[in-house]
Image 1 (tube, one colour):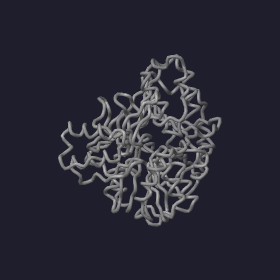
Image 2: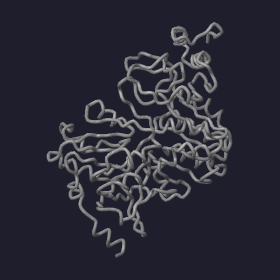
Image 3: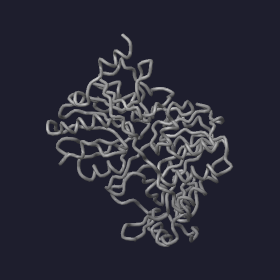
Length: 447
């Protein structure tokens, strides 16, 4: 039997595929931008027939149809490995929950720790001549997820990029139960906000820490994108890429001739990532581009892999940093924001790299909707705040007022260094807070 005939035999309508789902089932819905839109619509149409269907995914870039129905909570529950703004609202409204995870471990969760999916469905570009579908722009944990899934459904979208991969990025038609064809919607867009003056100042400080031949990991947000924009205008050269999330900034760097990957100890000449999200510019660039290589997250985020890349520079955001150097990057009190993601993976991996640096960046103050202002360097976190990075693992912290390396510092030294890069309006109070915490000594300077 040829692959085209096998495809035709497995081809069903979205409505038929949605009938695979029963009340109480676990259904995996891709990851980020390979969310299955046609399957979602068909499943929403069955809402009245279903109760407590457990949906799993992450980084939603569009509102699912299943949650546009009136009162979705009795019918569908969203379980997120990392939350976008959409999923954050689900958590607040009572039908969404976050699964704490160190991102590099997520494939193992699927093989050992969580219920197998009753239905695993994801969006793929069209099948190739050899009978393979592609995980598109989100390899992530999908290769591990399908090994235990009871039913596998591929939703074909001609606009989904085909992403060349190192391993674990494809699945054969022989291993697929059903295929559905979409109306080929355009890929969802995730553009970064224009960098602020603060973002640009932080970027200047960080770029000074990057040597020629460095290998880069950029997180999402204005600051990391500002770093990318500044690198594109700099004299840096021979840069490499090994990053969890591939964003538009990398495309700009590549087009500016800054990236060739020739100094990488492994995957030489390749830009390696585990998922991508951005604008159409990014999707067009990575489609069938052999320079860009997708791989499962247990490879990309493995600290042992990162450690093999000399001069590895990891740049990630934080919400707050306390005076001990602990990092909060996923919640504000009991208010869930995003997730741990791979921040700790890259903090640990970068420090293991020869010449590597892990840099946590944030603005020095937060502005409230009412015009109020508060320090993002804090004496301690509010109750309920999740700890993303321990004080023992934090290396560099950067605000618009400076950059400090906390490795090797004792608590009184850390307090002084962090207060020194806090917003000046809050420094006197932070000194008083440090005194109360017993980490401000007689020899400390008044900063």
